[in-house]
Image (cartoon, rainbow, N blue to C red):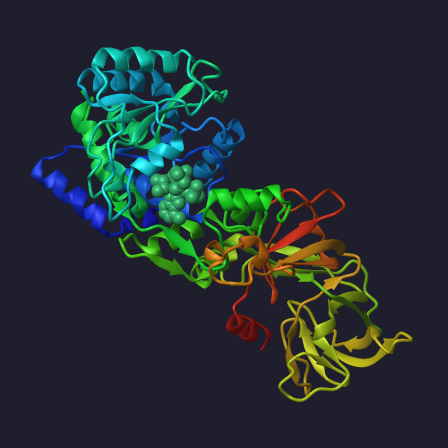
Length: 557
Ligand code: ATP
Ligand code: MG
């Protein structure tokens, strides 16, 4: 991570709380955690949480744990664990020690449940899940006590043991905390803390058929790991009562506290693993890393950089206000970073042959800087020749003065190379232009030919010094800004979100570009080779983000 990035520590209400806690002596060190459930790949919302938790640990010289909250064996798996580790590292963060797993604490959590039973604070309920829901009451009506609520400690211990030994079927019994069925916080109405599930767990195998619920697991995992500030999103605000209740009523090894901030919502994107999973399993996208998804792996495949994503998270800040961020805010960060760091290259997306009739040299190479403002990034040699490719868009038989490109009888400069004047063009039977003939000015390298007005600069590649590539342009995956709240989000998928351009021409050296490595195709946009589709002899490039319109004008003027 760059030094200047480290220095610009953001200010937000959570950091203010930490400052106050350190000042008052409530804590003398800071430990945070990032606690994903391994049931999907991480997305841009998780990036916000990662930057917050790991960022705090860095700036306060504390620690941040990576903890997999793996209490739902049916939906979790090793593929997700691996992808999450990869994504956190790629974003530029390092967790303290080995990754932790809630499942590592199953024995201790079981012990805490026994402790609650022994204190008369938990009971085995045999109401059905439907009855439990019915008994819970509503926001306006208090709940009512289960008939099983007042079982003796001995009976509860024996029944909980039976649950653990698989002597109850799923849904036939559960363990509930005995709190208050009339509480104005629904989560305090005797929440279920253990349920029966005969599912094989990706780490504990068949050892358990009872699994602790999130609200019981999370706070105690925090306590076991000595987390000082447990930061989560606002939907857990009410659950903080339960978090504190559990910590208070068992002999917790430490006293963590929970703080909530608002989730990140990004326009035209989904930030729900469940919904992302549906896009993947319905084959609407090409895996979790489809470049159109705001998953971390999708953004990586598309060519977004970790620095750009971190900068985006810094700019959006951390508050308690619900908000939806425009996609352009993220794209601006990507563009800013790539403008600084991406190598320049030339690629012609829709090639048109340009023949220089008076060109006779052989083996000429033109030097082109890899970055016009950064000589330290070096330069490369571009083979030049009699036959080149230019964009179809960059030639017209006739045009007014606003058109700063090639026109019959007029001159343009070929970027980094010579000025040429178009003389004639060839057409096919359909009347489409298939080639342009021109002549060049041998003395025009680096200076305008005398008495000739050069209208603009266009990009090119030589026929011999280029190879064919597939280029993919992306549009939004959804037709509405808030697909997450659509009744059926699959029905608002944009059917035209990928444009495949099969016959683009790229500088030959790009044929072996490393997937993910960013290039600015001059005048066109930022691109990188696709990690899945690009093969030797068949390069495939993804458009990361377009150049800004204003930039486009400035460059082509
Ligand atoms: P999803 O709905 O995508 O499954 P989640 O909250 O269930 O999200 P977790 O794996 O439990 O996913 O999330 C890990 C951490 O990331 C949690 O602390 C959670 O609060 C945070 N997080 C998840 N989504 C967002 C978001 N959109 N904005 C900010 N933080 C988020
Ligand atoms: Mg969750």
